[in-house]
Image (cartoon, rainbow, N blue to C red; front, side, top):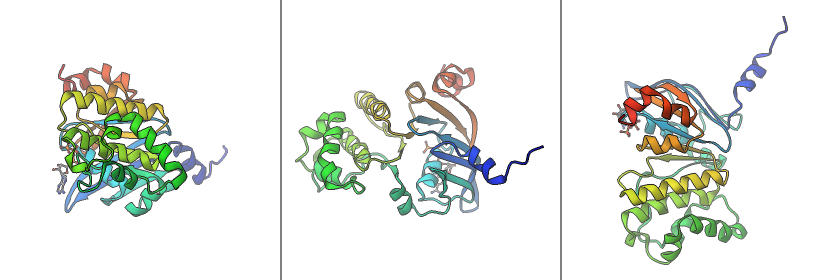
Length: 249
Ligand SMILES: Nc1ncnc2c1ncn2[C@@H]1O[C@H](COP(=O)(O)OP(=O)(O)OP(=O)(O)O)[C@@H](O)[C@H]1O
């Protein structure tokens, strides 16, 4: 029988842009992620759904490097980044849009967007900014205003619009529609869909499970720190368990 060297076995597992294996994380003595595995391929939109407290935010915090994994591996682009700092992960192209409305109020909308462009050279900035303005026309209209004067929904759009300015390899979005009026929710979800159409790889945590799964290439259901189900967005939407637990059907 031919022998497969360990390294090539590991390589064959690491096909996705992001590969998470046996991931554990804790807050003090309490473990909240219990050996979680998932993968995200380049260009995919992957949605994580699950009840409050299931561990979705913690997972994103571990992926962006702001919370340590206690065990397991995070591979990104074939490289083990499990022990890499959050700063270095940003340089590698992992970007987490800040939760909610975290913008710099005393700065203009345009300057807020430029802050997201740390990875871009000047020549490409205006082109990228125009692309963001195409996604969010209201930000173009208000580009000279102080961010603090925007409505809550517009500030949330700015916080999300800033992320693609740096052309991340992987965009992590935690509840981008949280607390928004239904009109803004629909708009934010459309923008995320368009970012995916433009080829961006996105890992999305979203309370609106139906919409998050409907637009996802692939989805994972997280329950108390474990993945309990996975499949294409369509498969999960059709699953009785998922419909009962997360879609109120
Ligand atoms: N800073 C913290 N210190 C201690 N425990 C925490 C902390 N943050 C989260 N937890 C706990 O970790 C578990 C997972 O929380 P997490 O926020 O990751 O879940 P979630 O799925 O994102 O839920 P939500 O949608 O409510 O944010 C929960 O039991 C929560 O109470």
